[in-house]
Image (cartoon, rainbow, N blue to C red; front, side, top):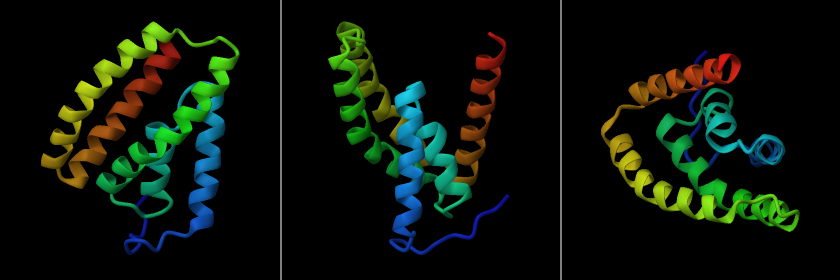
Length: 127
């Protein structure tokens, strides 16, 4: 399935709001949303190139995370030490990932991302 690319800045706002709402529900329910929901939807449904979808998802995840963490924190459901340690690792790892993404074509990046999602789905189903 190949989406028709849209010109920069012309993606319908309503489509982005709807996508954000779906990602928000899934984030709150399963702790997912950014990469697993928003990126494929932006590429396949909204015509984003892979690189732009990845970067946009990263930018969008901050407010989603803040709201989710606030709500779950009020319910005392967060392991704060684990969250801090995960954050440190993520801050280190995202730099390497962003540099690697910069060296990959959108096609190759999409293939790697798709393979990652398939492997993740299989692991969740069978492990």
